[in-house]
Length: 197
Image 1 (tube, one colour):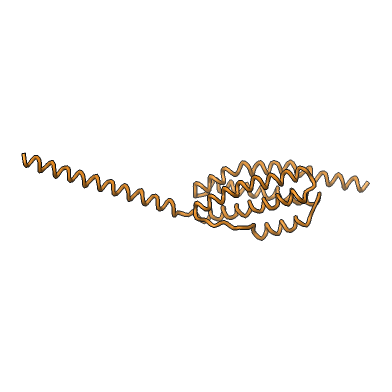
Image 2: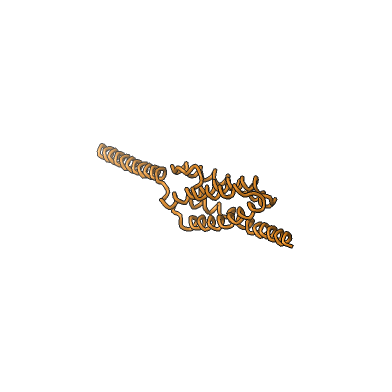
């Protein structure tokens, strides 16, 4: 009887140690996963994409405001308003994403984008419309290529997801720009031919 009791006690103790060891190992692996999940920053290419997207987004908002002030065509002014609305939303999402990843984004557009704004701010009316829409066509083709590349080959799933979710809006912007640009250019050429007669 004593032997049976002794064996049972040893068995229970061993089972207890085994359970404790398994629980401890599980806790360690969970802890390790959590730590690496929080501290792992996106790859350098993902970070570069985020920074470029932030600067591009800020530039689109600033140029959109300029279009609302300096544009003469209703289509151009409406397009400018859409740039302000859509890119402000995307910029906010990107800021939130960057903050969660511990990434510091630029606070203003890059030098080239500032130069474009400076040039456009000196124009008004039809001259502005033509130059602005030309820039928007070029800009959105480039944006789509960059966002598509990140969507396909990005490493961080959240950054890839941001690129993928933003792509349809950028494609809509390009489509709008492609329909507005010919009208703006045609308006200018028809006015020039009228004045030369």
